[in-house]
Length: 513
Ligand code: GAP
Image (tube, rainbow, N blue to C red; front, side, top):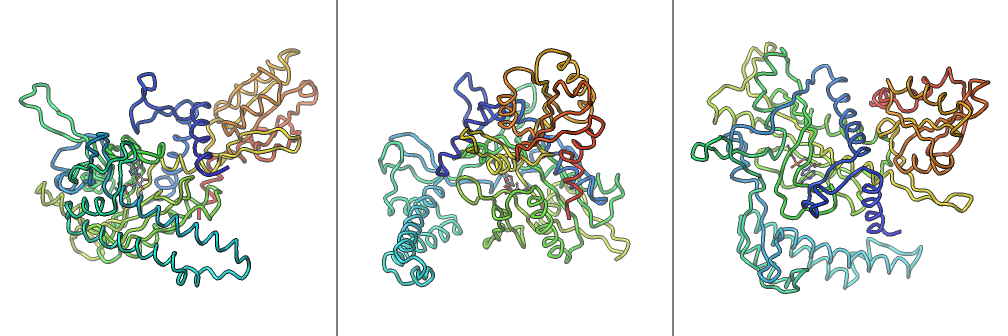
C-alpha cells in the first residue's frame, strides 16, 4: 500500500472507531478543527499524562502550571507576535482560493526533488549492485540540472524572505509559472503578510471592548508567571515550568489531518538557567526529549534531528525532532535556546523586574531559557500512524490492529465472557468491578469471541480476558495479547499484577533514562 492510501485509511479508521471526528461535522465541518471521540480523548489524555509525569513528577526542579488562554494584549506586543507572527499569503483571483506563498514555492521545489529521486531510483534498478549513488548524483546531467534549478530557487526565495521583499516572492511565483491547483490560472494577487493570531473582543459594551488574542503558544503564560512561580515555589535555578494547553493559529494552509490545525494543544516546558549555561542545557534537553520519544518503542528510524540553520532573532540554537509521518519527515517537537529575550521583553513592556537573585553568585540576573515544545495532536498522529497495521493472518483472514504503546492505549483490558449464560457474564462483571478502579476496561458479550477480539484490536486494547466454564471451577482465565494474539491461562489471583505489569504507566516511566 502506498503512503497516501495508508494515510487515508488511518483517517477513516480514526473516524470509524471513535478516535477523531471533524468538528461540527453535521454542518459540513470546520476546516482544520477536529474533535476527539471516546477513544481519541483517552489516548490523548494518556499521552499528556506520559509527558506531564516525565516532566513534572520525575523532575524535582520542574513544576507545572495552567495559565489562561486569554492574556493581556501587551503580552503579544512584547513577545513579538503582533509584529512578526506572520505568513506570506497570496490569492488566486479566479478560484478565490488562498495559499501560503512560501508553500507554493516549496511544493514546486519538492516536485523537482521528487524528479531527482525518480531518476536515482531508476538508475539504481538499472545498474544494481554496481550503482554508485553519490557519483550519479554529482555527474548525471539531468540530475545535476534539476539540483541546480532547485538550489537556485531556494537561494532566491531565502534572500526574498530575509529582506521581507514580498514583491520578489510574488515574482518568483510568476517566474516559475506556478498555477492555482483549483482554477489552473496564474492570475495572482500581490503577496501580503497575514497575522496568524485569532482575535476577539473583551468587554460587555462594544465601545469599551478591547481587542484580545487567543494565545498562539502556551509559552508566554509561563514567562509572565516566572516570578510568581519562582517566589511562591522557592525555585532555585536551574528550574523548569511546564504546562499543557490549547493554542490557536489561523493557519492559511491547514492540511494533513491533525498535523496542522487551527486549534491544537501544546505541551511546553521553559527551563530557566544561568546565562552562559544555556548550551549545556540545550544539549541536555535535546537528548532527553529524543529519548522520551524513543522510549515509546516506536522504531528509532522514525525520528531524526533537524538543526535550524537560520535562527529566529531571539534564539542562539534551535532544532526540531522530526517524525516520519505517512507524508514524510516533519516537525514533531522543537527545542529552542531562547536566550533572555522573552523575559527581557516582558520586563521592558511591563516595567516589572523579572530577575533572579543567585545566592551562589551573589548576583541578580535575567535567566536564559531553554524551551521544549511538542504538539499533543502531532504526538497523537505520530503514535497513531506508527501503530496502525493491516495484517494478513496465517489462516488467510485479515485484521486491522493498533499496536499502541500499552500504557497509552485508551482501553487497557477487555473483559469477555465466552457465553452469555451459565453465570459467565456475572463472573466477568465481578472482574470488571475490581479492575475498573485501576484501569479503563470494557465489557463485551456480543458476537463470537473472534469478532470481539477484532473489535478490541482495532482500538488497540492490549489485553483481552476471557471467562469460560473452566473459570468457574479452576479460578483461571484466558489472557490474550493484542500484538502476538497468543493466549495464556492464568490464575485469577495473578490477574491484577499481570495487567499492571503490561499496561501500567509506571513501567514506561521507569524505562526512561
Ligand atoms: N513556543 C514555541 C512554539 O510554539 P512552534 O514550533 O511554533 O514553537 C511547537 O510550535 C510545536 O507545536 C510544534 O513542534 C508542533 O508540534 C506544534 N504545532 C505548531 N503549530 C501547530 C498546528 N497548527 N497544529 C498542530 N500542532 C502544531
